[in-house]
Image (cartoon, rainbow, N blue to C red; front, side, top):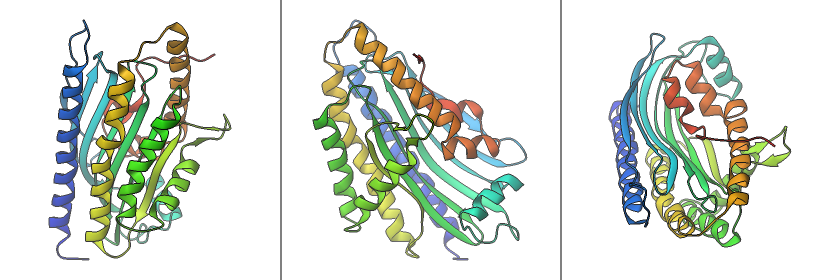
Length: 289
């Protein structure tokens, strides 16, 4: 395979770490600027390691009980090893070549989930990643908004920022990846979407690594302009017990989806990654009616 892939892996992992640093700084700045008697939240950092004979790890960054964020995690990782038989079969079923001959892999990415203190502020998810095997490589990721109480202008703004990023790379990217998100973040047993969508893409390999990496970077860059204005505006609004109850029930949807359907959760647990890092996405509190 391409002799420059070690360098490309290094570049991709460095970008995900840079994006993580930018987002954490912006979130802590928002904590500082929101008026509150509560002390501003700060990220607690912990190195993570993989088990099961596999290598690599990452950095788990979690903020709890802040002014804006009730719980937010921004994790990065770079891991490698050999896929277990079940993971090999899952990859082969998706059309990944060479799984039976050589199941080695390398993967790096950033994963973010924010659960907000104010029920009027939307929860949000974002991740981007690169995956490599000896026979192929691809990028994946996206972002989606998960309000318990939807504001149409917030949904429009979030999607507009993602569309702008997509339009830099292909006239059909936003349409394709929005439809993919609508399908991917659907909860079959509830017969409803997890939130108001966004974009989702996977197995992105156009044979032009630089172009695909540039698109993945632009999706990451779009996140803060898409989400931060909504978090700042809605976190300042008053709310009552009815809104809090709606928030806790909506979080139940998030928990159900991530535990039952989410591909990243399944892959992380199946490949012996740190379970605390994998399950970072779960809300601190939830309720079922």
